[in-house]
Length: 483
Image (cartoon, rainbow, N blue to C red):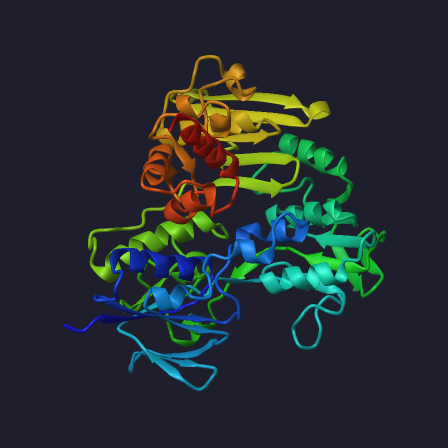
């Protein structure tokens, strides 16, 4: 029986992960003949870590997910720097912009998303691209362009105070730029944080040299001069970094006649309205998948690899409970679950405990329902954040002393692993992006992964958002000392 021809359109984090998951189940390509098509010239890389590249704490090569020889070693036909132009559903082929075609039995859309540019006068040129001096922040090439344009000490404006915008702002401020963040909401990261946490976060970032114009929208972009805001004020900037959200890349799916809403509509088997075509990651719309985050994409990749290889035909994607973390030097922010319960919560057993300590850059809010963590926001208390995340993930009863928990005096946690990894239970999830437990790290170490990089390569721990790397280092050091 010939191998099933699977074509993956997109060689970003979702497409690359799917390819890895397929080859984990079918190493020699006996069941799946795999073709991956990517529009960028680079090997796949971790977009989540791009802010570290801008900050200078990581080099571009260190955020790669694959090396140059990956495709040859793994029996994958990889077509880089090539974009899909049209899906021919009746003939089950994809036309590419280099004039070639790729035939499929199953097609996977992993086309991701594109930056959204707000309707600001002067921001977009006639070609639909940002005007001179304005750059989106989405790709590895964007990092190069931003660093080339951001002269040390030059004023930079960041349009957008969401997760990615703040990470870019912190990275540029760390390089010596004078950064101003313009954001229309009353506080940054309003999708994840309440007003108290947002206020403390803004104050913490201001201490690192970032100015904020909150509750203000950009009215006009003046290349080389900066932004005119809706209140008539002016923000001087030689460079404008735009980070105002993304939109699912659905043009191919729409043209092919697939069901598309905000994204390509998929069911629990990640099937589109055409049973031979699947979609995962940012381009896909599933009712229980939060958008714009890596964890849902990687969980979807695992499910789809089970289905495409036949490893588990009952595998289904049921949704993702996401933990959001801000990756900015000197700032620890974690948000998870239901952080904004209804005002009247007495009837459903909900308890809300809050610590607000802006002078020390600390804010912690815990939502407890039926003695379990229902949601939390933790800023400036990393031990508490890691402990609460473990309680949430494992469904463990919350300790009676809620205040001690919020102050980081609760149960042993992944963040505390560097200090006391022996106390961390084997079932504790250390790397949430990849669902890697302490036990998996221990098993990898005992199987020969003697360094943190070896552990990362074997288990993928720390290759997602990177926030668990200290914990992985702590466990590796503990294993070495007790070996």
